[in-house]
Length: 109
Length: 121
Image: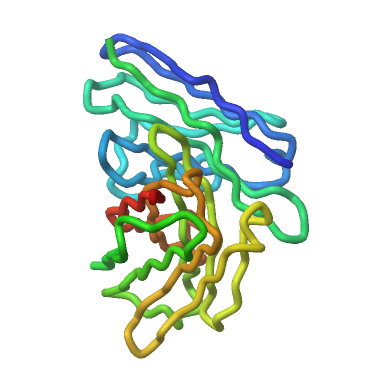
C-alpha cells in the first residue's frame, strides 16, 4: 500500500535552519500537508497545499515540492519548534486514501 | 470558535466494539464546506487515518480498517460517531476527531484533544 517516508529525526541548534523531507510516489499529483505535534497535544497544521501557511503560523515555516519529495523548512529554529512533524497526503487511487508519514522528531539542541 | 470534543469509554475488552462520539460546536456538520474525520495514534507511534463523513452522510474509510469501521452522525446533536468492531490490543490508541476544511486548506485544520482507548481484558 502507498506510504510516505520521513527521516525519524532531525537535530539543529537554535537559529539554524531545519529541513524535513517526505517522499511518496503520488506527491507530484497530490498536495502535501505538514502537521506539528508537541508532546501530549493534538497535531496542528503548519503547511497546507505544499507551500501555503495557515494564519497564525510563523513565517519561518515554509514548504516546498520537487517531484516525489516535499520538504518542510523551518528557518531560524526556536526552542518552541521542538516537536514531531508529520507529512500527510492522499494516494492517487479512486478512494483518495489519506496517508501520513511516520513522523520526524525535531530536536533543538 | 470551532471545538471538537471526543468522548467514550477509556477501556474496551478484546473482541468487543469500540464506540466514540465527537461533539462539534461552532460549525455545522451538515455544511458542504467540511468533512469530519477520525484519526488514531497508537502509543509512541504515528498518525493513522480511520475515515470521514461528509455533509450528506457519505463515508470514506481507510481500506485497512474498512471491514471493522462505521462512522455515522447525529445531526440533531451535532455529533459524529465512530464504531470499531472486533478490537484487539493493537487498536489501543488515542483517537482524535478532526475537521477537514474543503474550502481553503483541504487540511485537518481543527482537532479535538483526543481520547485514549485501551483494549484489555
